Amino acid sequence: MDFSNFRLPLLILAALGCCSEGNPLVTDKAKGVVGKNVTFKTTITSTQDFITITWNFNKADIITSIITHIKVSNTIKIDEKYTSRVIYNQTTCELQLGPLVKEDEGEYILSIVNMQGTSLNGLIDLEVLEPITDVKISSNLSEPVEFNSTVVLSCSAKGSFTYQWLNGSVPLVVDGTHMKLNAVGNELTIAEVRRTDLRGPIICIAKNPLESGTSAPFNLTVSYGPENVVMTQTPTGSFLQKGSNLTLACSAQSDPPAQLQWMFNGEAMPQKTTANITLTSLEEKHSGNYSCVAYNAKTNRYVSSQVAVVSVLEALSGTNISSSLSLLIDGNSTVNITCSAAAGKAETAEWLKDSKPVVPSDRVILSADKKTLTIVKVLKEDAGKYKCQLKNKVNQDESTYVMVVSYGPVVVKIEGKKAVKFEERAVLNCSAESVPPSVFTWKLNDTLLNISQPDIIIGKASVKDSGMYTCEAFNSITGITKKELHNLAVTEVGTVDEGLSGGAIAGIVIAVILAVIIIVCCVKCNKKSNTDIPSPY
Image (cartoon, rainbow, N blue to C red):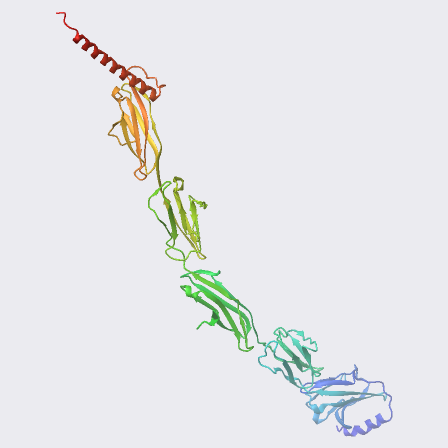
């Protein structure tokens, strides 16, 4: 059927001024995107009493027919330019157009004539937007430096859109000074950038009313540091033993990672640029100041760690006590005992005698360095076990010395009975305090006995064992001899009164001897007198 035959009657019908029942379109404006479809929505739910439905396109006052639908003959005419680009809904009269091109932008007119001679007219203005593509973020600086650089991030895209920035998953907040956006919103400027400004990733969204495009995540890497440069040492402590090992470790917060250089007494240590270094078999020459310097080639900043002061000391060993005299005599000798170590240097010295600290006095004198102990005119009480303890910052060592003081004999005494019965066993014991032990000599009534032991043992006492016993104690070192007397009485019958003292008994014996001598003299005198009488013959 030739639809041109109906065009004139339809136009005449519309020109007759048929009454309008309102706009059949939902809205008077629509937007679409190039390459996609757009649907012009209507409020129509039934076309039962419609005679004709037409969709026309008006651009620059040039009207182009898109589709004409004549209900009475149920014929649909689509302009050949739109044959493959429109979908028409016969129930609702809605029209879908696409894929859109920029030239589709303009006015679309829906005209309906019903059987009552009334027309329904609607007009919708279509805006065709460019699709959003190629959204990306670029930076004016590839390696900004913290506090030094001003960073400008630019968001670019193709199409018609506005911009939105995200920091991570939340909208980016700007303060207008440190961080600000330009009027268009596609440039983000960060003055004196900090590493914490944009923890990211940063995303730019370009969008229009119909669609949006998202950039690839952008991570802003800000060079910073070095900072918090920390050095640790193992073992800890400022004083280390000679021959031991020292390990130093250095760490720093920096991006990019800092380059490290170890320093010794303010000078760079050759080939010492790792985070950890170990010095083995330490010597005194390793004593000094150690530190670590961190350098960031991007920020061009140097930061030093704290300084570790290390002193390498030789451990004390071979400690010995020497004496100025080998023989010490009570009240006579003055001695110096000196403490020294074969290796290592002692910083302090302490003396103990029999596990108790030595207390200086007028007679007991310590040298200024306390390594020499002087005892003036030693006494027997000075004898004992002396200990010297030497100490330095890395260890301690000690030595012991036994002091022997010769003295005596003193307190010589004889123990035993003063009277025993005939053939009774008798024991006399002589003792004396003496160092070294005394040599003993016995006498009976001033007659030397062949006995050199401290004990005299008489198995069966007889009268010849009675008398005055003398014990002599002799010290070969001091040259001192001391003696003690003991009287022993042996009786044949009964028990001698042990109540008499030795002097009383001696007096009795002497008196008896004198009486005997007197009697003998008298007898001789009488005999002589008798001889001198003349014979009567």
